[in-house]
Length: 162
Length: 428
Ligand code: SF4
Image 1 (cartoon, rainbow over the protein chains, first blue to last red):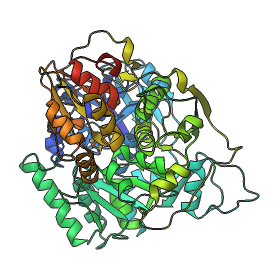
Image 2 (cartoon, each protein chain N blue to C red):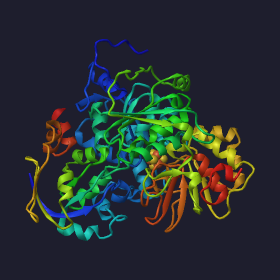
Image 3 (tube, helix red, strand yellow):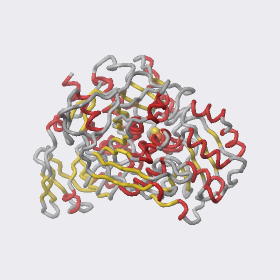
Image 4 (spheres, helix red, strand yellow):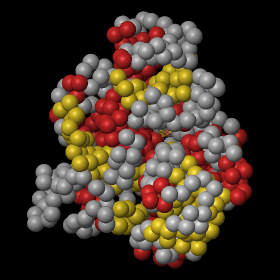
C-alpha cells in the first residue's frame, strides 16, 4: 500500500482530549466525531485536511484516554496515515485495530515540515519526502500486526479466525 | 498460594501474570502473545462502540457473561438525550446477554472504585478495560490495562486479547510519608520524574517500605495514574494490606504472584518519601508536578474532590477533617463526588457529607462528571479549577481556555477554604 499526500504537522503529547473532546463522546457516528476533530488544538484542521492527509507529530501522540473515537475521528476526517516519533500505547493499538496506519519514525519526523509532500510505502517501510528528496527506512511491522492490518482491522481478523 | 517455581528464568510481575494467562512457564519481554483475560470492562462511552463492533464479529453470545463488567458512569445519570440513548443501548445489551456485572444508576459507581470494592477484580488477574484507567486494579497485584473498544469487542467474543510483554520500571519508595501526603502526591511526584511518556509501553512496579505502609485507597490512587506516565500496568504486590482488604469481599478464588528478586528491570528509581511534599500538577500536563507550598497566589473558581483517583473514603476523610466547622470560600464552587454508593453511605454515616454541605459544598451522586468535562461542574472560558482528578489536558474540564490543577484531597480541601491553591497548614 502506497500513500502519497501532504503533511499536517503537530508537536508533542497531542492527547485524545484535544483530538476529540469528551463533550462530543455522546455519539459513535463517524461524521459527527470528524466534525469536531482537533477543534481545541487547531481550529484550522478541517481546512488543512482538505489538502494534507498525513499527520506528522513529535512524541507520545494520542496520549490520555482509551477512546477509540480519537483515531476514528481522525480517519473519518480523511487522514490516511500518522507518523510520529512515538505513540501512546492505547492510541497505537486502537489505530491498528480500526485499520488506520501508524508509523513510528523519529528520523522522518525530524526531517519533515508542515506542507511537505510524502510518499510512504507501508509494506516495504519506506518514507520518501518528495519535497526534500530524503528517504527514511522504518522497521517492518511484526507479522501478527501486519495480518490485522491486511485483514482490514481486528474485527475482520477475528472473524477469519473464528 | 503461590506455587514454587523452579528452573525458570526470573520474571517481573508483568511477565509472570501474562505467562500464567498464556499457559506457559516463561515469557520474554517484547514477545507478542494472545492471552486469556479474567475480565473485560466497558463504560457508557466506550461500550456502545464495543457492542457495535462485537455485533460485526458474528457470535451470538459473549464468551462468559460473568467475566464482563459494564458500568455506565461517565455521562450518568444521563446528562442529555444522546447520552441517554447510549446508556439505553448498553443496558439493552447487558439484559439480552444477561451480563452479571452490569451496574444500574443507584448501584453504579465510578468503575475503577466500584470493581475492586465489589470484589470483582482480584490479585493475579489479567484484566482489560475499554478505559485507560483500568490500570488501577494493579494495586491488588493484578495485571490490568486500558485498551480500546475494538479490543474489548474481540475479548467479549473470544475471552482473549493480544499483548506485548512489557519491560518493567521499578520504583522503590523509602521513608515515612509527611502529614497529609497520600498516594496521589507520590504518583504526581513520580510522574514529574518520569515525564508523561517515561514509562511508555512499560509496566511500573511500586515497591518499598513506604508502599508497604500505604493504605489500599492510596495504592489505588497510585496505580490509577500509571497511564499518565505512559505505563501499561501499575502494579503493587499482594501483602497483608491487600489480604485484609479482600476479606469478605472477593467473589472467587485468586492467585498471588511475586516478582522474582533477580528479575530484570529496565530501570530503577529510588524515592525518599521523607522529602516528598504535597504536590500540585500545573496545567496542562500531569508531569508538571511542583510542591504545593511553593506556589504563589493562584486564585481558583472551582474545587472538585472525586474521580477514580481520589473519590474514596480516605480522600473524603481528609477533606472532611480540613473542612469541618469551616465555610468554603464564598466566591468559588466546591463539588464533592463520592466514587461509589457504598462510599457515599459510609461518608454519610461518618458525618462527612453533613460537614461538606454545612460548609457550602455541593455533594453529588457518584459520576465521572467534571473529571472529563462531561457534566456536573464544567468550566467557562478563563476559569480555573483545582481537582483531585488525574488529567489536566487542554479543555479536559470544559472550555479550551480553562485550566485544571491536579492535587490530592488535602490541597484541594485547603484550597476550597482559602479560595486559592493552599496547603492545610494555611487554613487550620
Ligand atoms: S473519573 Fe475521570 S478518569 Fe476516572 S474513569 Fe471517570 S472520566 Fe475516566
